Structure formats: C-alpha cells, structure tokens
Image (tube, rainbow, N blue to C red; front, side, top):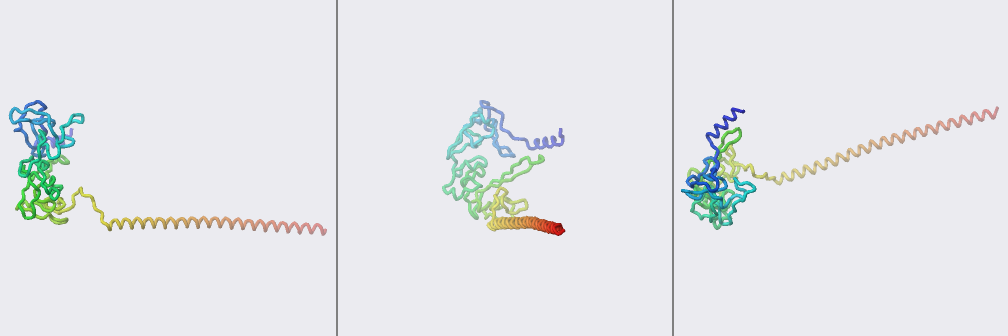
Length: 303
C-alpha cells in the first residue's frame, strides 16, 4: 500500500468530507429540517436518496421525485423511469417535489437557481451568459440584471472548494451581480455598477473584464474556451504562401524534368554518333578489303 498517498487522502477527506444525499429510500421517514447545501460544492442534500424527496418537517416520508431539472438527473439508472421535466413557465426545485410557476422579481428562490425567476419583458436586451433570460437569483431573491452605470447593485460571492491534482484542495470564488452584463460589473467596495474593462487592462476578478476572464497576472484576457479569430491579413499571408510554394514546386519540377530530358538526349545522341562512327569504320574496312582484292586479282591476271 502507498501509505503516504493513503494518509494524504485520509487527511483530506477528514478535513473536507464528501457530501452525499441521504440513504433513506422511498417510504422511509425524514425531515425537511435536514435539507441543506453542501458547504464545499453547494449541492442540495437531504435525508432522502437521489431518487426521492422529503415531504414534511415532522413525520415526513421520502417519496419518489415528481420532477427533474436535468435531462439526465444524477442518481438514476438508465433502466429506471425518470420523473418528468417541467413545462415552459415552470421550474423544478432542488428537492424535486413538484413543478412550480416561475417566481416574479422580489420573490424567494433557491441558491444560484436563476431559472426559477420570471424573465422581464425586455429579457432579450438583458440576457447574457451570466444570467438566465435577464433574471438572477441573488441572496435567495429573484432580481433583474438591469442595474446600469452608477446605480447601486447587489451581489453574491460564493467560494467552491474541490480536490485537485495531487490531492490538494483548491478554491474557486464566483461573484454574481445584477448589473447589466457584459457592459458593467459591481464594484465590491462601493456596490455600484462600473464599466467593464477592455482587453489588456489590469483587473482583480473575472467580473471586472468584458471578456469575463482575468488571468493570474491580473490582466483582462480572452477566456480559454474562446475560439481563436484569424485576422484577414493572416488569411492573405497563408494563401500567398501556399500559392508561392505551389509555384516554386511546379518550377522546380519543370527544371528537373528539363534536365532529365537533356541528359537523356545527350545519351541518345552519343549512342547514335557512336553507331554512325562504327558504321563508317565498317564501310571503310569493307572498301579497303575490296580494293586489296581487286589489286591481287589484277596481279594474277598479268602473270
């Protein structure tokens, strides 16, 4: 056994115990007084297991969940029947007791459940990736994300603790506010909406940047998930380089082909010249032999 690793894991889980839903199954007794959020992950917990919810404060019973908020809810097997999703204009609370109508502004909502709040009439102007159709659940109250420049704002700051690589804990602090995003952010000192900062400016938190990304060096930058945008001059440079490379390749192939043809032509010319020279030599030899034969024949006749 890897004892150092075992001790490190044991110490961590002793300081930050894992939070699971209760073990009480359907039909068991429970109390809604024990409904809570995990201190590290802010996950909803109760006496009941993942498939049931508690019905009452006293003498409660764990009953099968009547709704779900996720397409694939946690704790259910693929072969089990899932509770239904809520229709438009309704939401499913964390406990899954029943579908409820969206809450108007000023009404209570569950932690970080922006989807429980009713959207404003101008939701299209207020909606962003930092709210739900222009609505927010801040400090357990439904509000609109419509605070403008210089107006007072409200905010929620939540720290999530998790186990990272090498079994070391790390904290992730999320700040949410009701200023119009991404144009403004809520100043933590004066609780007023201020303009978000452009790329390259100094920052302390993500919310201060228009890109909602403040790097470790304290500078507003693009978020890591943002796709890279290729500039027009880069497209032109790549196209010019490709055309130049293709042209150079074609020219090089033409030169190589010409050199191969020239070498082949030189070889053929040398071969034909050699054959012609050999043929002339054979003709000369044949002519010399014929002349010698005629001379010898003339000498015999004179004798």
